[in-house]
Length: 576
Image (cartoon, rainbow, N blue to C red):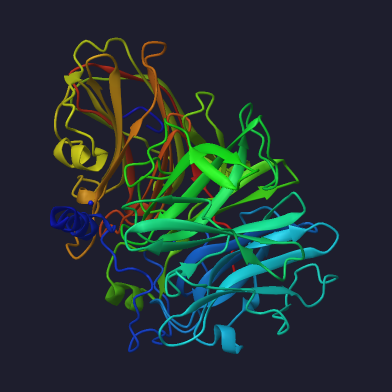
């Protein structure tokens, strides 16, 4: 081995409350205000766990990606940003531009509180490019200390400026949407990218009525005067407040993306909502009935907390956009920290954006598939490759020759038999609970097998990303885990065993693939070609910088063959 170069009643309410406590990703809701902390800024910034190629500004707090778009040769990313500190507060719309979605130049904030309709905050929203006129930003303005929320718009001051540096908020029509009768004005936010149909522009705004999530629909002929439809486009009981809704079409054939206004029999629609109560997201696939402006999820999409997720880890407030230059739909998502607010103040920064992902409809029609944008490959440097390595039960083999703290790893595993797969208990409906019960150190039949990322030399610390296969009554069940419980010797951290089930048919192929983007405090993994994805935030004390290691392992009785592993040292992106 050493010669390898690189190797719903009271019960319902109580249930809701308990789930909320254990499911909110271990962090405070990011709208929680810490007045005594939100303007505390460190003179120096800690680089210990800062990322090398994920997007994050040089200092301070960030959260939701807002209004990503491509316009006149540049990609634009707007995001919620605290210019004065590293906890949530003082929020503005920060603005960066890029030619390649990887290297970014920061500009002055595009939007900040300056009007009566956004005096107390400029919260999330979207961008829409109006043909022949240019981009328009829709965002949520906070009117008063009670957090009354209205929808506002802004336009570029100078369309000839390639960076669209300055934005103005016309007084004549702002705010363009206010909560009407029966609408909860303090939970009424995050307007979507608009689509055009039958002479009207249309948007959604997220809200709730008690525990029912709601996406209200508004129509406009001129993008200034908006009227609420008689009914929401969709609601779902028991889901709570719908933040950052996203609504867009995906083609039923191929991987090409579609403009948000495309409709027809050749597309399905996606409705994604970020759940304020749980700090995770879910999406459904379904049909948009344009004649009545209703969206009906397919019967294969669970419409609730147990629904499909883009990412089963630390990934929230996501926003997609159509990139016309390459006919693709690109997804951005925010990954909060999993340490404490005191840690964030000490570091001088908090929050990153996940690597932008291309997404499309899986050929099965039951789910979406995601993959890191191809531009990321430009950061790949030194490569190490290993082929046909057999892993017996208990084998741990180090992959040497790369910068294990900043790497891109692609690996394919195969297995000759599924006869020894463990029996699957039908009560195991929660993948994260199952991962917590059957971690990488618990021997199994077929698996656990995978990689140990950000590992210390003697494995005092490591973050395993692994598969485990079970035998159900009529199929095999595949579990993908990214388990942070052993990621750090530090105890005051949220260290979950993130996990998701993988929808693959092992009767046709006895192979599973994994790609993991490792970036100091991030392990962003894509299972089975992007069918199940998990982003973990971890903070090792020993496995830092050049003291980090990467291993492949098998802890199941069935031998596993690592058919091919390719790993690259990753150069740092230029982000200023």
